[in-house]
Length: 364
Image 1: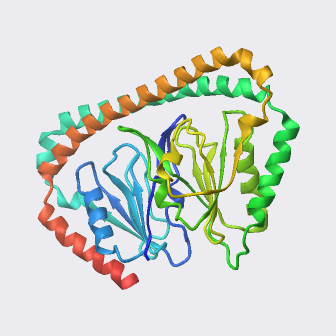
Image 2 (image 1 turned 90 degrees about the vertical axis):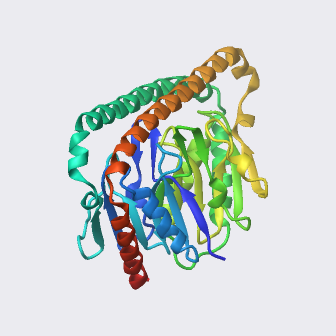
């Protein structure tokens, strides 16, 4: 049975827009083929990618979604080595080996330039407003991180470091011991969720087949669970085990999910602080569940409960406000798209789509 996976290659984070575009192709450099779409908003990039994906639905597919538009695609990967992607800002991609492994597809060849020139003032105004709303959203996410750091601070100073270390070593060893592997999968860094105009969204269930051995952890910021993910990541790197790293959509420095595809095992953070991954995994059973908050001394942390609760509220409010600002940016972007849509020659674009499909078939 062919799989269809849903991933985010970029995200709206505490750092601003954060890109893992270099990891879209899992087998980068190994007979890869990359088609890079260049063009403005509304020029048909996402629609073209969706149609290409539909044509190859009998193959292994990855849909890489846009964090700033819930319905738009950033890339489609076919059979882990062929992809068509959006190479425009803010995730600008240029060919590394033009004509050999990478092709540029300029969609600007299919628009009415005179018509766009007539709308240049509106295009400039809307483009600037989109940028302004994103900047405001990123300011709010930075504020959210200040609240997150305070929440983290309380727990870092009340954990039993010896117990945390012991549990990290035990679970890490158990994770590393499961199943042998003949050939390592590639190491990748992506997002399994994103802060979008519709809030925080994920389709993590597409990444975790029912047969996978799933380790789960939960705990508050600063409780030690982040150290576990980084410990396992380092151990796998030393052992030559390929890992898929799915980073936290708010703070990319942290990891929410690790998957060792060849070993069919995974480690998932089900704390639900930002993303309720567990709600999407009703059919899964955990091989092991570790709650890092159980390693705390409650009499030590309880006096800070009120301040922790206030900090949590500040964090949630800031992220919700950032999502609303991203939604405002999308509304302006939709207006911008409408201008370009009216100027596009989509009949010619349909012919281009057929050419692209033929090129991909020849590569397959």
